[in-house]
Image 1 (cartoon, rainbow, N blue to C red):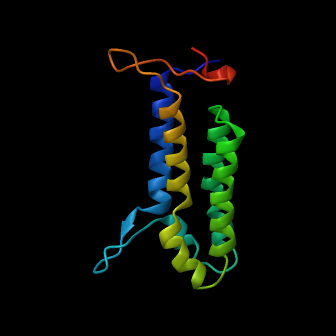
Image 2: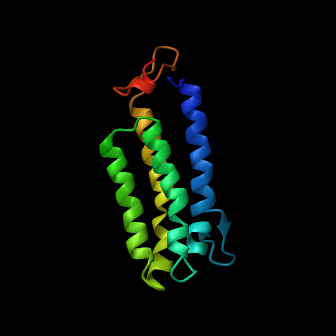
Amino acid sequence: MSQSQPEVQRDLDRLRGLARRMDTAFKIPLIGVRVGWDSILGLIPGVGDVLALAPAGYILKEAHRLGVPASVLARMGTNVGIDLAIGAIPLVGDLFDVGWKANTRNVELLHRHFQDITPHGPDGEGALSSHHPTLRG
């Protein structure tokens, strides 16, 4: 089954929305810093950071389904690993979570990957091309 460019764009938009909810859904009054459910869940000792892994894992699973190469998946996994490792440190990890935003970083990696493989013709549009069978046009 192959996906067209609009279908991939819909998937990217959906993942971007998930990343926004996890990383920047709320603005802290007075200081203007944006946090999401990842930071809020991280405040729960012991289980919060583990719970926040589910959406991060889903973004990785979707990236694999979309045919992203192993090198991009590895970078995405590294972002999640850093978020989990440092996020698990009490207080320091909570502050780190506010700035790291692994989900947003990973969706941006996906977006850049698909921008790089989308050839643009004279009309500014083109079909996705890739070595991955689900992305061949």
